[in-house]
Structures are given as C-alpha cells and as structure tokens.
Image (tube, rainbow, N blue to C red):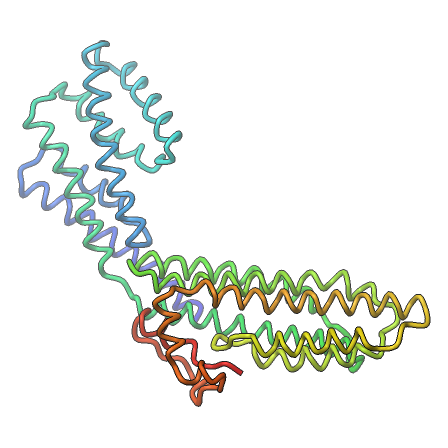
Length: 369
C-alpha cells in the first residue's frame, strides 16, 4: 500500500510534466512562434502539485512577464545590450523577486530575457510572441491540473484521521493504565512523539487536498488534523508531571477511570460537552476530599489536578474546533435532531464513505454522547 501510494505520487506528476511540456511545444510550433521550446519549459516549471498553487504561480508569471519586458526595455536603451547588461538584469530580477516572495518566477523571466538579448527586438509582434509562449505554458499547466485523483487523495486524508484517533485512544489507555497501577508505562512518550510527526505528514496531505478544491469545505480536514496535533502536544505535556509522581494518590483511580471513559469519545463525530461536565464533577469531588496527610500525598494530588487541567484543555481544543466551523455547515448540523437532543447517531460507528467534501463536511458530525 505504501509503495503504491509513493508510485502514485511520482507517476502522475511525471506524466503531467511530460505530456504538458510536449503539448506546449507542439502548440507553439503550430502557431509558428519563435523559441517554441520555451513554452515547454514554462509549462514544466508551472505545473505544481495543487490547482491553487498552479493558478497562483500562473498569475505571478503574467505579472513578472510585464516587469521583465519593462526592465529589459529600459536596460536596452540605457546600456549596451551584452552579457554584462544581462547580468545586471538578473541581479535586479533576483532582488525584486526575493523581496515580494516570487523567487520561483526567476527562471522563466531569465529565459524570456535571453530572447530579447539574442534578438534585440521589442516590436509589438515579438512582444506578442513572448506573451503567447507564457500563455501557452501556463494554460497547459492549468489544464493538466484539472485532472486529479481527488477521491484517492481524500481516502488518504481520512485514513490519516482514523489512524490519528486510534493512536490517541491507545495513548490515553496507556496513561490510564499507568495511573491505575495495573501495568508500566511502556514507551508512551515515544509513541506521542512519533504520532506528532505522522500528524504533520497527514496535515501536509490535507493541505494538498484542500488546495486542489476551490471550496471552503475542504479546509475542514486541515483544521481537524491541526486540532488533533494540538491535542497530541497537550498529552506530551503530561510527561514531566507524571514522572514527578512519587506516591500515587488514591484519587488516581478516579482520574484513570475518567481517561478510560474519555478514550471512547476521541472520535471525529463528537462534541465534548458531556465530557467537560463530567470532568467538572471530578474537580468538585477532589475539592471535597479529605486533605492530604503527607507531603508526598499533597504533591501527588497536585500533579493529578494538573493532569485534569491538561485533559480539560484537551477537550477545549475539540470544542474550539467545533465552534470555529463554517457557519453554514454548523447550521446544517444543528438542524439534525440527533445533535439537538444530544443523542448518538445510529451510524456513529459506521465506516466513512465520502463522495465530495461538501457531503463529507455535512455528514461527519452526527454524534453527541
């Protein structure tokens, strides 16, 4: 599966570049343009991994083409047009491109400038020739990026989401087991560190999927995974606190039971109001408990209190994610009887099958415990 995924990411861009560059050269030659091969180079350098990136780069190419024409025309009339002047042009181009953050446009503009260096021609016909080379290159790049395996990419994003939820549940189980004293804490912190790195990769895939769809709904997956990453970091902060526990207080069993209860709600389709209410009950129970008799007991109970505060922030991260959702989607979700009543959906444990980002976004949140 992993090899197939890597091959898919390699073969499709390679095919797009090969077909796009060849098609651009063929079109330029069919139109009788000078330097037709440059259209192929422009297409090659403009085909990006996402539609949005390609559109943005294409716009930058058009804007910087105008700057290149103006700059070369100015230098041509002020200085003798030779290799030294070309060096001055490149110096100016690199400077302004770096200042505005468009360094990726330098290579194409350098190619266009060599055409002016070779011909010394600034006639309307030659300017049109150069503009058409740019237009053909970016047009082919935009056209080819319309062909994309959206469903396959969405499946990968969803697999990452499910994997993240499962690993967070396992980590919480390990933390609960440690607090209950039933088993040691075997490599849980290494597990969290590894999961953080994996979530970063999942977020990158979600960004690619989002940038290939001009829809606000597709941003949902990025926001969801970033929320899980913040939760993972919150769990990582428990490390120092749990290591400082010398004597495990009797209230640790209560905290352990709550963490075990919480693992069942580390899922996508959950709004954590009831988990937060139950957590407040635990805070009240701890406040009403007898005062600690020893220093070790006092320190252990204080650490437990901090652990509960971290768990509260863990839940607030999910709550903030829900509150920040697109208003139109939230309105659709709040119209569901399941969410109004706070009852779990009968489909809450079913496998996910998404057809489009909009339908996924509207159907993901069906369960409130």
